[in-house]
Image 1 (cartoon, rainbow, N blue to C red):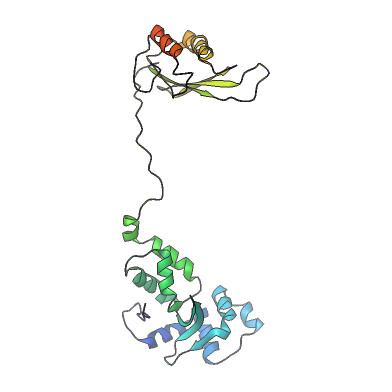
Image 2: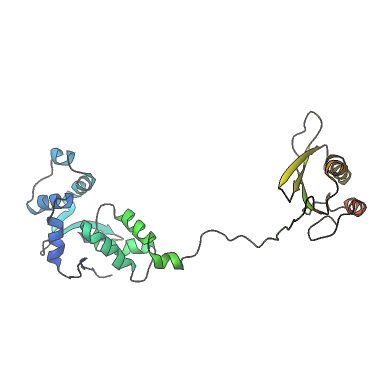
Length: 253
């Protein structure tokens, strides 16, 4: 990419860039004075100024002025060494936006193109923040989040209409000899009940459902479950017919 010497005001004058670097009470202007007058940087000079002057003082040996009076810094870009112009504060936003608007490339490509001809302190962070606010890129970019698969909606409009059961375990054996947990979820109110079981066999699960759940709350219309063999066994199928549970998708019948 060719060097884009375009000022925020729309001119193409290198003298305007040199004036922006040297004018005003800024740390860049202070460094411009040291370079133009060949004033060495002392320890006292670095103590008082801010972060930008301190960073530029580290690059003092690589700073120089070209024939137009533009201060440049020697930077290694890829395998080549280039003389990059230092952008003043009022030029930085415009340079980022003009470069990014060429094809609305991402942060990395925009930074790579700018570093071919430009340099300033905090360049990476400024480019990242500016590109992140581009409305065109925000509208066109793809989401990084995986979309959720379509799930079946569990409609439950009456009390004790639908419950969901699941088995967890095996766990470490308790002092009472239990190793499994039967979890029952009431779909109408999302109330949950857990029952400790000594095993996960179909007869044990059926006995726990009848003694711990149905004897207290009654038999539901539909019992939902996953594809565990204990919950899909012939015994559970026959018990559902005895209990009078209605059939439905992904239920025990």
